[in-house]
Image (cartoon, rainbow, N blue to C red):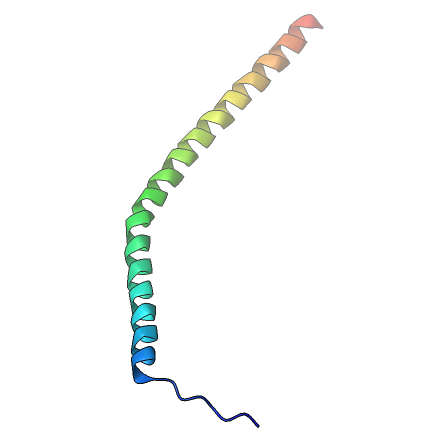
Length: 70
């Protein structure tokens, strides 16, 4: 059986400090990016509505064109 290796208290402190700093960085980054993502979703929804409207109009014109030709 292998004996457990004793980890220095300084190494433990550095590891936990890095962990806490990473969590803080991630939370701040998320808070910074969240409003930008909301705006992007709103813009994308508006663009999708416009595309759907254009498709609907194009389909109606195509159907009208086909009915005229018959």
